[in-house]
Image 1 (cartoon, each protein chain N blue to C red):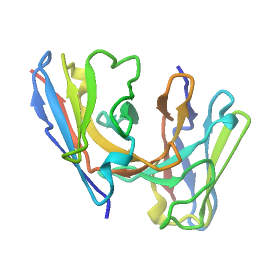
Image 2 (image 1 turned 180 degrees about the horizontal axis):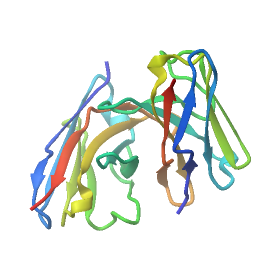
Image 3 (image 1 turned 90 degrees about the vertical axis):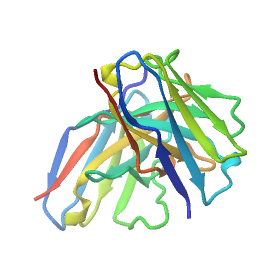
Length: 108
Length: 119
């Protein structure tokens, strides 16, 4: 089955840039979606189809995807960005959906 | 606005069954693909099942195939998850989620319902 690997944690100071990576075999050929989950809350999509932003999500959130790594970039990080972030893809060979292992973003 | 409300969670003994429901409102239910996703305590997200808009296509991870069944009633705007032969490791918050049109992203989620499997 398809596996997505994320670093367990990322620490960043307010105002700096956080980069969260999601590794998978040939992930560059798939559409990657990113979700933010705060404690006790349901996930919220912050980037979909590699780099598109849903309405209501700040421009500070952006994404890229190439080769074996997709990246979520959070610019000008705010305290409110502290959360768990998950990547997700659709594995077309099985019609299964796959979530990454998740990255905890801590704002110092 | 889009609303998804799960219900049916609770404490259940190992080996028993449970059916979850997800009541939808604020959108044309019958035109959307829907999912169940779960999250064990302190763990990450795990995809559980997907069902197409008309209910004809259903998929599950290999680990759950045969025990879990997803279904929907488009006349009642309700999604279901039938869970049989429950195990301790099925303990989790279960979310229903809507798939975005022309994408495979999940753009709306319910608040989740907690299922605890324990004797």
